[in-house]
Length: 504
Image (cartoon, rainbow, N blue to C red):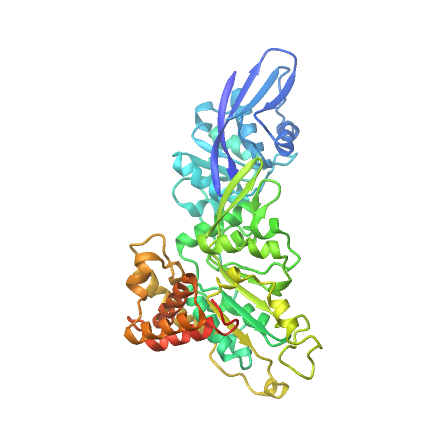
């Protein structure tokens, strides 16, 4: 007696179809599992056995062999429990064999037969849709998987419900897509006293996804400003939400039965390892830069991060993806994030305050910010100094614009870019501009060209720096509602480029 079921094995955000073959034959009673399973998959034998016993289904005194094909593909995770169980039930003629061959199944079994949630339901649903199969998953994963919308999703609470469905006793109702409502933003830009230039930099950064470095004394408001950035970012588009949620699904971060349109905001501590930031570890899991895909990666105390970790950011910033290469895995993850970095001007933090600065001024400042290499500094489009706010100013009433007002301008600028790049799938925002498209939409007027030429000659702008100034100028023009990039737009872009560091 043989039967087949289907499930998936994950390689990054890709889900590869795995055929679960079950054979029940005469011989010495045994329950063997082959096909390169890891420890969690091998333990599925005991969970399946206990779950079937809870349903008063006894395994026959025969030789049971489960093969996970292709046999040379590593199988990891507890989601293989359900496909193994239904393949076995089909081989025992308890459920129809032809029925289970039309689904991709995943789910972890508890000892009493309940189906426990697993990671990766969203990419599994994508793989099932490509194979023209339905998806069978735990009930807790149904709303997440149904968001794909291209295939039927059957969500069961227990193995008993699965058996009742396939025997026609109680058919399962297809799951409906769920969406987690974003929380109300309680942090408002109006709460930040002063720092108008830093607020302006964040507005430009949000509008065009331009990487930003803020340098200022301790307590000047760098972290406070960054924490309010999510309040001015537009919600994720449908495509972006799907991309981001697939990564979060693999990381087990979709815990509320659906996906969110809120852009991710990741802020790892400066003691984070390279694997935590870039990705890696067992199974080459996504790192913080991929979890921040289509959102914000905030690195506070930027120079305190290990030098090797910082240098690994250079290539992902340029390419929008990262290859996690290990001896047994080569996984590519998307990582188009907005990098916001915050740093003190020196080790003590008071380089510009003669009354509080240490005796090593100004060498300490050069040494401290020198931990940020030139090539990495060259990748920051916006560099802004965040001066300290006097205590007398803290008693003044809130001033400046509310986050909602700024967010409206950012949304308008993003809409302009969406229309601009509708025929260019590789570009979504101005930060993605390059080549002929950059020349087409970001070339300034004659006065602007003359200004940037003088700046490039005077400060030795690199080719990358030159192009990044043009991209920022294009975003400033979009915020200004201008179809043409003019000299004032270029001037403001240059002022942010040269605010911290005079080169590049």
